[in-house]
Image (tube, rainbow, N blue to C red):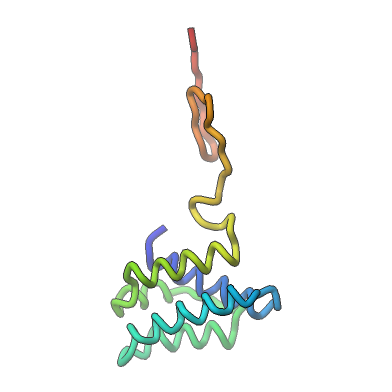
Length: 124
């Protein structure tokens, strides 16, 4: 997943968790930290910041274009991506690319991980 999409997904997940009442204090703090980092980077560039505020006002609405706006505004850097990853880990631990599968590969031979794979092995 590209960094802009990751940040947009984290913002959407954070807003959704807060709206549903499922947000713990850790989620709320992590969301606030991510948003503060973005606000600092978006100073003087209202487009992406307005999209974030719209997402907060209408959590069920579309976040389409938010990732693009964040990247164009130069708001996505390593620190913001790290805040986004932490927030996603708290709100949806199985949603990220690392959480799609839980695999134990000890003593494994001829392994594939993913959907729709086909494999034929002959071990002697």
